[in-house]
Each structure stands twice: as structure tokens, then as C-alpha cells.
Image 1 (cartoon, rainbow, N blue to C red):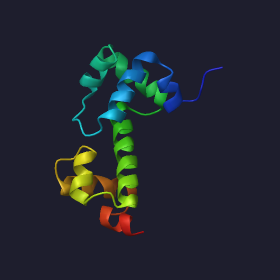
Image 2: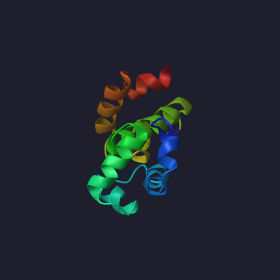
Image 3: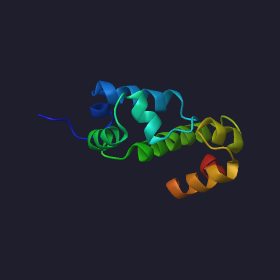
Image 4: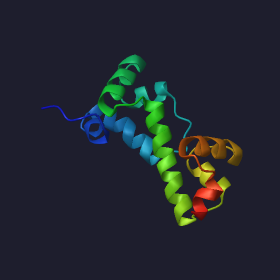
Length: 115
């Protein structure tokens, strides 16, 4: 029986696991599908298809979800300013991070950290 799409299925694929670990260890890096495919030693198209099938979402959608999960945790713990958190999760400006975070969660980062 094949596992449902998700992180465990992705980590079970040794090639994809390398790219997933890189995203987790270096969320602030400006990743591209091409760079992640290189980490996984796959062509860009093969990597994209395999990743999407295994995890149920495209690589950049997964990276966004990972960054937002980290940001939510950091904001909840009040572990740095919005700008510092933005940088830690891969955004070069607080405003770009705020727009992405608000679009993703429905709440601005400062409001999220208060609630």
C-alpha cells in the first residue's frame, strides 16, 4: 500500500529527502526549483513532478508553508522583531514578509503575535 501524499512520503524518497532537509535547514536561502532539483540529483521537471506527487504540493508551495510554520512559531514565542523573523524565514524586508504572512494566515504578523 502506498502512503498518502505528505512529508513522510517525501522523506521516504531518498532523493527528495535531501532537498526537503535542505529547505528545513536553510529556510532563509533563496531557493529555486532548479537548485532543489540539483540537491536531489534530479532534472528540474522530474524533481517537480516527483515532489508534487509525493508531498501533494509543489516545491515552492511546500517551502512557503514551511517558512510560514516557522514564522508562526517565532511570532508566537515573540522570538525577535518582525524584521528579524522575516530575515530568518527568507524575506529581505519586513513589508514583503508581512504581505506574504497576511495572505497566508489572514492576519498581519504583529496581530498574530498578539493573539
